[in-house]
Image (cartoon, rainbow, N blue to C red; front, side, top):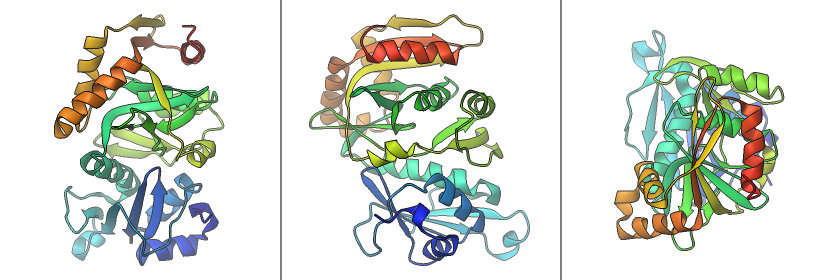
Length: 305
């Protein structure tokens, strides 16, 4: 199997600037074209373990990131994103090219992949049981996800939980984990083995760095998982660890609020979300200590919390 890591830097650059790098991420195939040189090293590092598909086959998403022309090419250079010939976003500073790639890949899935109920949530699996972590920005979701990955959990997704409409299983979409601001140093200290991208400052979300997805999770990207728990995490400085049951009616409404396409799917979305809630225990979770959180999640996935 050809992977990004098996390509030389020159070969990767030639694909990106030519017919495109045809990259498989979970159930999706992305054709990425770019003339932005700094993007090459970021893709080589973060996507080294991902399969590369042949040019000319079926592609789900056609993405293009291009450097500004004219005076902008030399003064305060910017990067532009185009999707199937349209430009849905304003350009960003050139230094933000890699975060822009990640954001645009998320945008493609959340706006086009309506064969799934898409929840804005991380999802991880261990012992054959998946736990979904929906949460708004700033809740500590990605920090918790990055920490759990160092304790034997499989990454299905950091940003988007894909619930299959016909049977309610979660389809993996393992991609780099987005860490923001203080979370970057927290994970560096907690997981010295973690591979992180170069931090990018002054984005709309502050300083951003991405954690490389585990190779074992990528190798199992076509293996779905059955959800058993939905946990709404919240990091709170100095707080004692607390896991509280959440009534299913409230869990339904809170997950619906975190869905990208619940209203788009109509009755199918209602049925899929209802099935997910029926099959899963739901909790709120407050924490300040990552070691305590690791121990609790181990008990939770075994049904002993």
